[in-house]
Length: 393
Ligand SMILES: [Zn+2]
Image 1 (tube, rainbow, N blue to C red):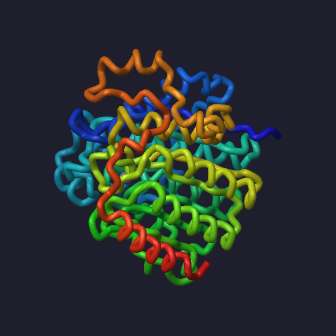
Image 2: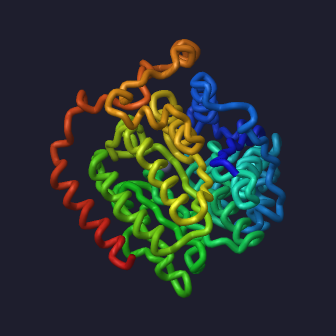
Image 3: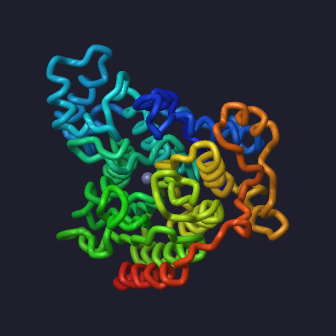
């Protein structure tokens, strides 16, 4: 098999939208997908349409009473008990309010992540990308942080059940991947790794270095909390030093990664100050580790990312360019390729609707950015964190 990659589309995911004001919008995936199309990087033979997840698949992670409540709260006319149900199951908050069609949309997202994992485990493809997935905050019995069903955890549980494979989960969203971590906290065969802005300042307030798993799962969990205002150099040092050690120590059969792109300086919901550079380097390293350690078996999901115009389309497209070995991914690595322009057709299509000027290039010109005043102090603090996080590996 060539180094084939599949792009998984979960059509039923597009109604996953809380309300007009909510930052988690399905437009994000559309913007990214159209950027790939305009770049000539998404041939139709790479696309796989996924089925929606079955209840028995959702139940690999979620409690049946929760699934039943999500169904009830998805109706155009919710049951009389809706207010109580929503409160009990974490679906009454401003972050994660229930909406019409919620169950079907969230189950479609879970189906996409299962299909991506299955494409890789069955040998149909070496890599798979499901951009609409990565809802890493959902718990077995309650929704949280914009997440209703935890498609990442469901896909991992499905791989465990069908193939018995050891899975390394790599979460690069700026928020701690709490839902996935706790789903496998006692499991020695699922390693959960998360690099994120420290929970001291950011939702969900967990993901400290001392969280390492419990019982048989102790040692199969690694958290790398970074400081607010962390920039590219220090972020990449933290990521490279830790994820490489963890992956080599754990020796996975499959890597499943979550690509929330909210650690970018433009993101409105966090304080980390990275550029598009990390969103090129990070998938490159994950891909390299997958080839070194597990026959290239790599599944990537989307996740957070709330500058939907300037950041998300580029960041998620980069995951796919790296995964599919597109020549542009190599060109962006070269000094003269750093200012490769975005396709004009994409800019022309979306600029009229965008509230901000769209970037012209794939990568950011950080020479125009003011360095963070506490850069050296932050670098030292981050170094202490990654040394502590990786001391066992
Ligand atoms: Zn996030």
